[in-house]
Image (cartoon, rainbow, N blue to C red; front, side, top):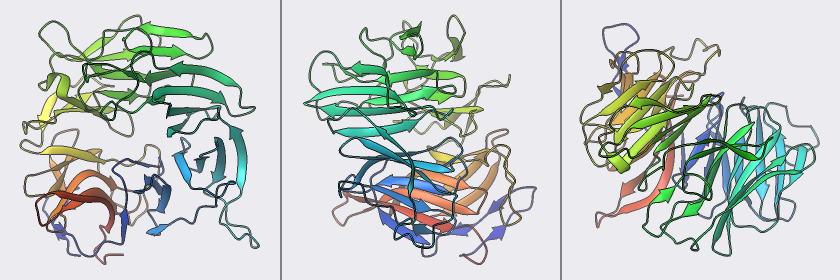
Length: 409
């Protein structure tokens, strides 16, 4: 591992990939805890795998009660605990910050258990930021569904069932997420015959659902997207790409507001628009996944106008320190940044505030990065991607954890 400092405040460049601290065969989907301590993956057999990013090791998870693998999982809002869901429908909470008991054969014992509606076919499990409820999504008998249950007693707070045709292999997976602290959810479960996906329930419009009142809190414009994530959750609302006559604006519906506001008058990619929200919820990035015009950065909490950074590169992730977290001396206190990948595979981290280059990393030869996270609390870089096979086709997905320290540790 080599590091070449570049003259200029907060700019470090020239990291070259040595042997990763950890390699893991995974699927592309993953999540990182808010404290940047743990990452969660699904392996090739749809089993949950958890990695300690600081210790660079796979966490030994306890076995599900039925002996089978865990099918879904999520971190709590502060990153201090993990919810795991077994095939039979039991979700169990495990505290990640408590030391193992001396006589334990497994590193964790569950601190809470919640029974979800049985039926299998699980896709996602999501914990509300306030910790009071869990949301789930699944596909059962070809139909997509989602719901919300209370953590205290397993009481069902909401249930959403797709209407219309049965799900097909190329339709979007059912998706549900909390908006705000946990009083509202937004769902994506309805397949459409034209191959497009619709975010919402029942009437084909984007809806924020008020759990307490069991009604839609806001009816918005019809949402149009191809396969890309044309929506992003903000701390107090949801941003989404939509169609308005000939334009494809990016809008934002905030909780408690009567109508959405325009964040970007016309997204270049139209219904091919990708939207990504920075972990602290202060910046939104937009990019057409079919062109290399750069990444449009949108300030969602201030008044700075949208601008383009990283021309000729594609978005792969963020590099941001958790808000209100002390960064250790071994860490690098960089400003919030966006990670982009050039055609040669080189990863570069640009400051969201002014678009300046902060860091550069060169992955292994032949490795194509699809997602990345530049961790600041401990100097680590997490990559997800694949190696090209001899026939030019993409191989299996792999996660790599690299050190960004001069000593490679």
